[in-house]
Length: 328
Image 1 (cartoon, rainbow, N blue to C red):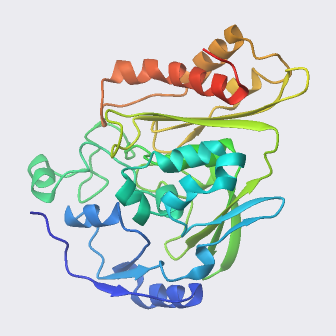
Image 2: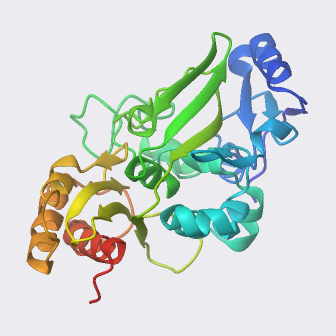
């Protein structure tokens, strides 16, 4: 049985108190919310903090408010996001994505912020310590080689968040709070294509909320490829959002892919192909093929490489058709 390393669990009641703790303990401390991904990683010794700073008691991170859009606290549970009636009505892709994370039990514990910041994954990284030691470790933890592509100068671990591509497709903004104060960043700018440094976030910063702009008249959909119907991380996540005018012409569209690189990918060119046109099936297929060019899967996650690549255009097509209301 894998056991957690020893640590001290700290429970601040305010953001200021949490930052004070982080400043005091520095690199020996990590923030945690539900811990549904962090604790297994700690058991495998991918992280060994001496102090865990729990964000679960900070009430301002647990609010959901509607005001010219929707603000969702990063501490809201995934289960609450998935089941919230206003999210289901106004941002159905987000409700779907949150409801597709792991299992019902873990969605009760896991938070929206936790899923948005979840660690990147790789076959060579997500193993226990003896396994990784026998191989020689990888550059993401304890080593200096990326075993996926030995000549790669950077880690190629894959983005594994379900909610991240949805946030990008919905043009969300993230609010972070740190020792330098509060700042806001676009969802697509929050992620970096590097398996180690995959977040545009300082170690002392806390993701406190997300803001979703008003999407009245939009359709939004999330499609997930995984081996099983529960538990599994995405092998591919596709988020599509689009708005048609009264004549059936696409006036706005956004499309994002997850689990195809170390960061979610905004498929701008594919979305632009739809703008100003009636989204007939042939056009959707062309846009889907364009989006699939951005996917360059590596042999470091589940399923066959060729199959995963082929499924990108299939899932993009399905997501776009559902988002704009085309049957079949």
